[in-house]
Image (cartoon, rainbow over all chains, first blue to last red; front, side, top):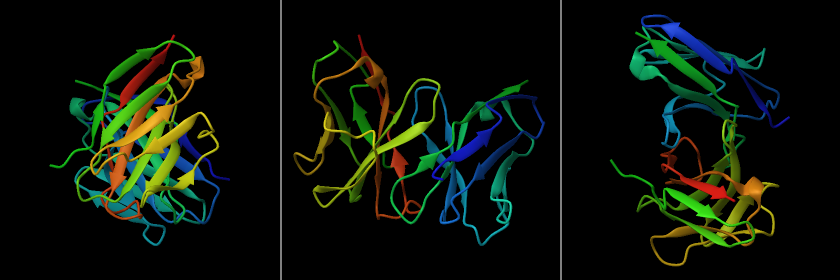
Length: 111
Length: 115
């Protein structure tokens, strides 16, 4: 119940494409869903986050779509660039301090 | 921009040895965390620490692990007797409040290799 399931494991897109990363969860008590971007040798860095009372959140080229009834969310990266190549993690929090991470998606954007 | 600093960046240790991983959280943050990431796998929560005591820990954080804030700036993770399966990237994080949505910042990690 505490799991966050993320897919796909890896993704390759061409520059300008729109990669989509999906997450699903079971625990309806989760109340905050951050997405993290991680470059090799670095720690995860917060990219964008959403709460369950919002169906969409957009920040620059990054958009989260949230389907509360289906307990699913997805990250879209518009006009993807080679510099977006990284590992992306969705995560969830249940009113506590611990983040529960998905397994990550390694994105490669080719030029 | 304020950073969470971790040292060393890479540590190699013999199985059975004790290791101490060090972290300097952001100065005005009050909550501190350790996470680990086994190569190619997800980031997993180990422990959170507030007001000089553990506030939450996962089942991974067994008696082999301990945390300490020995002074006003450092936050350490000790593994008493390392096992091969402890090889992972260990991330320290800190936050201003206990809520994840307020300034939760990760360090760059310490890669621990147990041989």
